[in-house]
Image (cartoon, rainbow, N blue to C red; front, side, top):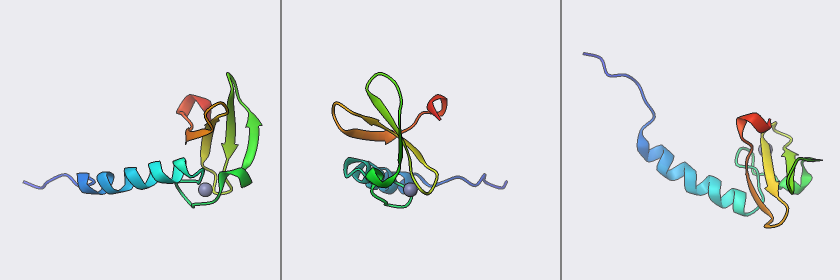
Length: 75
Ligand SMILES: [Zn+2]
């Protein structure tokens, strides 16, 4: 019986901390660009939306200056 292809868990375990580190540095998780270079626009409730040059969308919490990936409904 053929096994279904799936992403080995080990990849996720390696990539997630790297992405978290990039976000903590204010950098895009896709291309590593500084997000202060991205297109910013006002969002809501003290949030700022940032579109990176590579097209990834992030949300910055203005109070804490923390970045995270934008949720699907925020895009
Ligand atoms: Zn990017």
